[in-house]
Amino acid sequence: MFFERKPYLEQLISSEGNGMIKVITGIRRCGKSFLLFNIYKDILLERGIQENHIIQVNLEDRRNKKLRDPDALLEYIDKQMTDKDMYYILLDEIQFVPEFEDVLNSYLNVKNAEVFVTGSNAKFLSKDVITEFRGRGWEIRVHPLSFAEYYGTVGGERAVALEEYYLYGGLPQVAQMSTPAEKENYLREIFETVYLKDVIERNHLHNADGMRELVRILASAMGSSTNVRRIANTFKSVGGVDIGPNTISRYLEHLQDAFIISEALRYNVKGRKYIGTETKYYFEDVGVRNAILGFRQIEFNHTMENVVYNELRRLGYSVDVGLVETAKRNLSGKIERRNLEIDFVVNRHDERLYIQSAYALPDKQKMDQEQASLLNVPDGFKKVIIVGDRFGSNYNEDGILMIGIYDFLLNPEAVKR
Image (cartoon, rainbow, N blue to C red; front, side, top):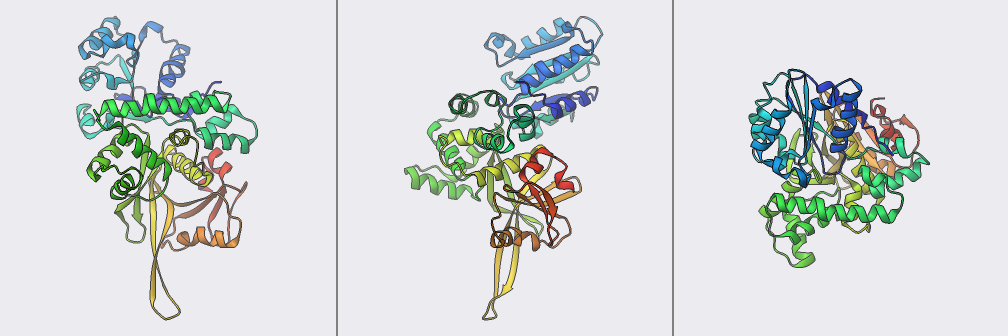
């Protein structure tokens, strides 16, 4: 089973010759290495690039431990560049190399070197690293398989494929497994031995149980508004563990740096400002989220919301959670104020969308509930409801675009109708 990863391959090809260090980031095991060492390398070979002009090093491989020394890596690459023809330097998991910025900077002014590196930490392109690259770091963010990528290869009945995707997510290795037991065991194993272990070791954490419990709390409340104090109170209530808000904030940052979770900030639509007291967290891969909970607490409405969030991020949108304040007189004449939530306020360049994710709309009452916040938005940007039990797409009488989940996931242009 082969996943072409066309959008990312196109980004790699188009970035050639831009004079920058190409940095491929994303959660571990999402396919970065295969993209670089197999898919992209095959394209180079097809174009006639000689294999000895493709220098590749997998720094995660124990056999290359000596090359994790920055000077040893620099010497190794230099020795292979024996003429003035273009060399393609492919380095996997560069974060294993201390002072890797110096190594990469050494090739910024080498005219016959195209440098591509992968990394599994969001701090890769932090302000400090960007400064080190002198503004010449070019990020290509890779995600687990989208449903379109998954279904385009797996095929079969759409409803069955989507249910499998909701359960086991989009890690390429998982998608190639044939039985539920294989998928579940792999996801449990990779969370404990790769994701959790990596976060703990990389950040020198002494409270592994606390980090593990935090991830369980986030998984259990996926897509629910929360804050660090509420999470701290949850720790006390479920296990009597006293972990302070500052520690929890640091742990949340570590999980985001490792691309395990992402946050959606709350945004006051009418006030046009962010509200710092609440946020929502979503998982980069819903299969990993389900594995954390032992494949219990499977709620497809929340899973669909997480999948929609991930798809919007993959399409290049910045994603926030919207809040709209409404005011209405009650029967006694008093003004009642309510805050209505919009699942996603998304922006890309000059484009804005207000989006609700609705797993089902069985009746008018549910429909009114889902669109109430959208109808109170005081601007003319497009309003969308993505519906899990709907197949077609059309505008309703209130001017809201209704999109079926398959249309949204399989057709990236659906929201532009």
